[in-house]
Image 1 (cartoon, rainbow, N blue to C red):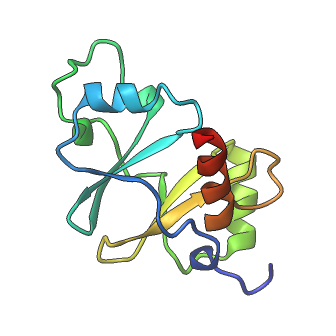
Image 2: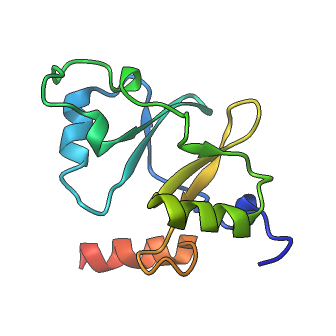
Length: 134
């Protein structure tokens, strides 16, 4: 993995949501335990990354989900070395990092495999989706 960047390892077509998504909509989304993070976009610009724990019980379902998410600690540059990022994710127990360019454009989603041995690929995600649909 030497010389490989985060951009080389991302899921390139992650599921995304409009920046106007509500807390209630994302609560429903997170009923699927395969989903770890919701990516909120305004056009092509990444606005927020929301995780299940961000949706505190006291929040109204109608509240904008973009206000409870953050990119701090959840986003990484596409130029970061994949080896170092993998080690960091394993050490912190983080399974997902959103990958965005300096101008805020979404590059993809970095997904640590449950085994911790590497990153999920577009093919892995497609296979899981097919398996769930069957």
